[in-house]
Length: 203
Image (cartoon, rainbow, N blue to C red):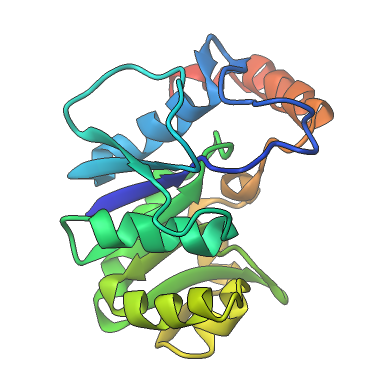
């Protein structure tokens, strides 16, 4: 399976690019890459433009520039899927350091019968910690060309498996997979978590 890391955001709430910020001695994006590597044949980092990122070079990591610039996460998903060598891809944001390998593995297991597999907690969806198939390319392109950028509109047009809270809890009872580093306060909290639980080396 391919993994797609969306790294084209503006970091507006953070105040500057967070891709070089460190957590437990490594960059945020390296945390994401390390979690995805056991599940991936390739890792595509989708960006709005060419630039530098703090991660360890690897033959399995490729950079992809947005095909539809300025179209947000939906445009990034399209760019990654269009470039992917696999029929399905894990899609995550670049600032989710505590992704559960077990949860993503379960989602990959159930994905062949669906176009999208997405976690849902109560009514809250986690579309940037989900699995998408290449069957989504045509409906995404139609949405992008209409400048309709809400991922929910895509979900209404394809076959979706919602992973409900009971299933999520079996693999990630604290829902740390969905923790985003959007602000400096979020980063400080993540650093405390790493320090208190010794998470730098894995689970």
